[in-house]
Structure formats: structure tokens, C-alpha cells
Image (cartoon, rainbow, N blue to C red; front, side, top):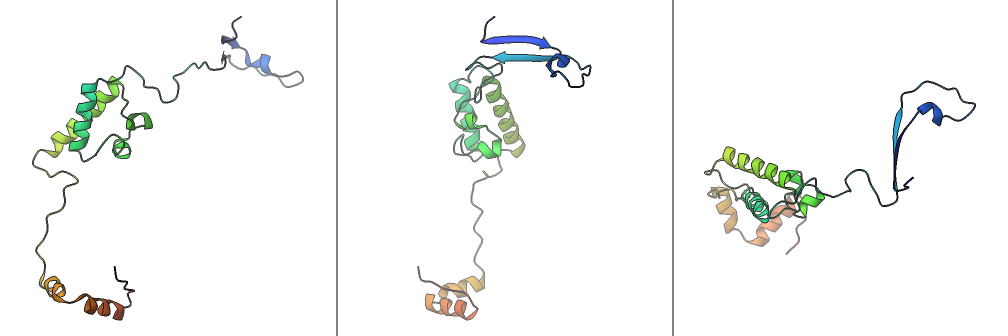
Length: 153
């Protein structure tokens, strides 16, 4: 019998120790693997063949259009795993994210500003113009009079 992988069906009643109450239970499947061998996929492995360089470039371009600098920056908002944040995607994962980003880009439209674009600057009000004419000492004194702590830069 190979110790690296043993598989079989064991009756639950045969597992109970002598002297205990025996009950009729359904069969349990037990799989035993050797050290260093796993039945399921290892942690951090992709679930299929690796995405092509062209897919990754397309995905990165769409992420940049959405306002992200790289895969790691998009990890939280896009729901990337740690492996994906490192730029490693399977073909199906890359296709799904590309489709999602293209759909969002289509919904947002081309005329909408990018998410990281600064808001347009409004014209200063008359009060802001008057305060701009005051010296720093006068502004600091007024803030201190109102209870603020003022420290020179």
C-alpha cells in the first residue's frame, strides 16, 4: 500500500472505541496524503493557464483608465487577491476583469471626467478676496482670538 495517497471508505461505527454506544451512521470517505502532497490546489495558485502578456497589458490599460496606477493599487476596489495584485492572472480571470472594466467604461461614457481628475476651481468669493489681502500676522491673531492654536510653518 502506497503511503503517499491512501483513500477509502470507512464506516463511522468502526471508528468508535469499545464501550461506547454504537449508532448506525452513514459512511465517511477518508483521504490521507503523504507529506508535501495535497489533494486540492495549493494556496496562491491560479485555477488555469496564465493570461497572455497582451491580456495583462489590456487589463492594465483599463485599470489606468479607471484611475488606478497598477494592479496593487487596484487590489481593494477591484477585489484582487494577493496573487492578482502581483500581476498574475489566469486567462479566465483576466477575461472576466477586462469585461467588467469595459462594461464600466461603456456605462460611464467617454465624456465623463476621470475619477482622479481635480474638481474645477471656483471663482473666489468677496470674503476670500478680502482675507487674501490681510497679512499672516493679522490672520494668526484673529485665529488665536477665536481659540485656535497657531504655529508658524
